[in-house]
Image (cartoon, rainbow, N blue to C red; front, side, top):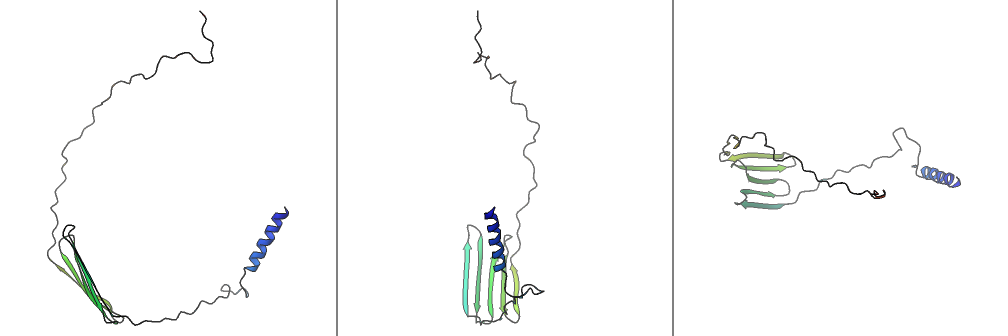
Length: 150
C-alpha cells in the first residue's frame, strides 16, 4: 500500500515539474512559433540527358534538360503503347512557371480484338466414384474386460 502511495506521489511530482513555465494563456501555453525567413537561392546551371532504347522490350524514351541558372529548357520523348511517339518541349522559370508543348508523331495502332468463343461446351461432370468400401476391421477384444469363459 505504501509503495502505491509513493508511486502516485512521484507521478504527481513529474506532472507538476513537466508543466511549462508561464501562466495558462487563453490560446494555449503562450508559445510563439518561430518566424520563418523565406529565402531564395539562385539556381545553378546544369546540362542533363539520358536515352533508353530497348528493341526487345519495345522501349524508347529519353530526356534532355539544360539551365542557365534562371530558366530551364528541355524536352523528353516516349514511345507509347499504341505505337505513337510523344514529344514534350518545355521551359520553366520563376516568373512564367512550367510551360509545355506536347506533340504526337505517328498513328495509333491497336491489336485486332477477337470475340471470345469457348472451344468446348461444358456440361455436368459424370460421377467418377463408386459405392464406398468399408475401411474398418472386425472389433477385437476390448482391454480391461474379462475374457469369456467357455
